[in-house]
Image 1: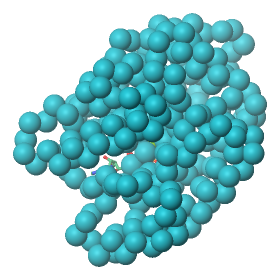
Image 2: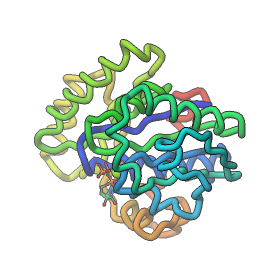
Image 3: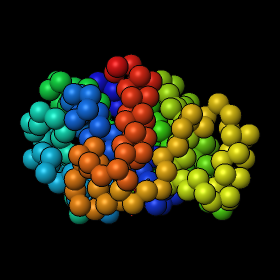
Length: 250
Ligand SMILES: Nc1ncnc2c1ncn2[C@@H]1O[C@H](COP(=O)(O)OP(=O)(O)OP(=O)(O)O)[C@@H](O)[C@H]1O
Ligand SMILES: [Mg+2]
């Protein structure tokens, strides 16, 4: 099983949208057995993937000493956010890592191939712990003012984590919500590529209404037959294909 963290301490950059689409395309197009854990109390991934929820309560995982057993689904298994997660920052990094490792071990025993962790938009213990237990990290980025500063902060966190989790592989910085007609976005992308030539992913996720519509209507983008959705489907299929190859799952 490969564990992939989707992380950026900046809010609203498209983390959850990428988590949900990766899970759906990997499962429905590529037949992978996928699990998603929503470590964000906003619960956005939990809301969109609600039909795939497993019985595990994260509050019990993090705040009870008893081992919490659960069964995974055939395609996507969602470990849903829980209001008790609001207290997760009271736990230290070691405690959070230990609980996440227990979940990982149950997922692995039940044949899950790709485990995706959706993280909150804050530089706290939940994010650091996620990076400590992950095999890979992908950072969605926005091409707006202050994005560069945000990327620099994220890079510092990842570099610190690498001293304790040397096996984590950076899949890179994924430009997200990109408007190709926006001159500022093009300028920011060029700047990002100049500074982080090796880290910027070879493609972007564009800002498209079909993507937001799929998330808000809890339907898989891949099922949308409208012509206007075609380009978005191609982008997320390509992203999924690339992630599965990078993580040696395809
Ligand atoms: N490619 C896209 N095209 C159109 N809308 C998008 C796209 N990606 C994300 N959005 C929209 O932008 C908003 C923020 O996206 P999302 O929730 O995925 O970001 P996030 O990084 O997870 O936010 P947070 O940090 O608050 O968890 C949502 O309303 C989502 O529907
Ligand atoms: Mg989110």
